[in-house]
Amino acid sequence: MTLQQMVNAIKDRPDFAKVGMIACHNGVVRATSRDGRDVEGLRIEVEWDALHSIVQEMNQRSGIIEVAVHLFEGYREIGEDVMLVAVAGDIREHVFPVLEETVERLKKEVTRKEEYFAD
Image (cartoon, rainbow, N blue to C red):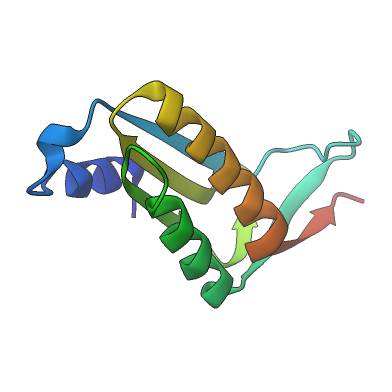
């Protein structure tokens, strides 16, 4: 799955005329941890039921047409995608807050990661 495929699927919706913007997030594995240590990669586990619940909730927000999420599970190397999120809605005042909240909740409530550090 790619962000472009997600965006294309949103554009194929019969109600796409209601969309005024699509905001996207593409999280990738970076070479350093937040505390500055060198990272070789990370392992991601996903709570799928929690994911579906959050997406369903975000899709009910005012002005939102669709929230699409793809999470990559398992071992990921530096530079590889971890999380793709696309939020389509009527206006940016509706879309940006939903994108930010979705990403934050996915990181806190849905995914668990284990970083592998360089020796």
